[in-house]
Length: 261
Image (cartoon, rainbow, N blue to C red; front, side, top):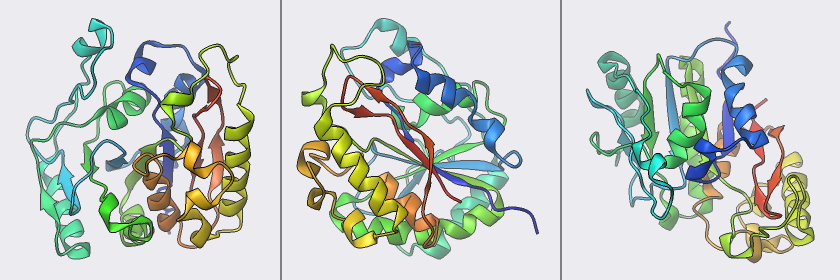
């Protein structure tokens, strides 16, 4: 029986990573090499699309990206990612998701946000597979997102690569602009150590309540960048996630990524 497609949690950083040379960019470029085979499709859940009900986008004849940010260099607003469409795969994915979520909504013309295209355009500069996005629903709570991942797990057997895109320490007001590359602020590192311990022990109760961990409110001031991790935890069906990449930028921006095993 073919190996199931893995699933990833990726820290997507800022839109400006597209123009940078940070270590995480080299990591993104190696992502396709880590797969057992080429996926039929990518389904990404990003911190930057929040809805009341699970909603699918990308199933359109002309998929595109959006520039959902402001105040960055003009070059970023000219960036293009030549996405492809695949009507057959889109219909199959939509049918599968409808069987999992009775309240599934469609927004095919919604463009993919930077939580999707910043890391994935480095991994697949000219993708030969379709990319779709599924929204998060923070108002439904943390455990909902674990259960969301559990429901999506069967797609791994259909060669769909599922990616959660966010950031586990994401407090932009506490960035240390003078911090050396790879250097972590103590309060942020303490939180990540506790988080990784909870992941190793598959302590879902603690993982669903990051504010219960040391410096949790400081590291996770709002939940949207954290929730994609819970989806990938659910996809792993009771197993611990494995570290995929670790790095710090500006002292407290965690670029840590994890993979199912």
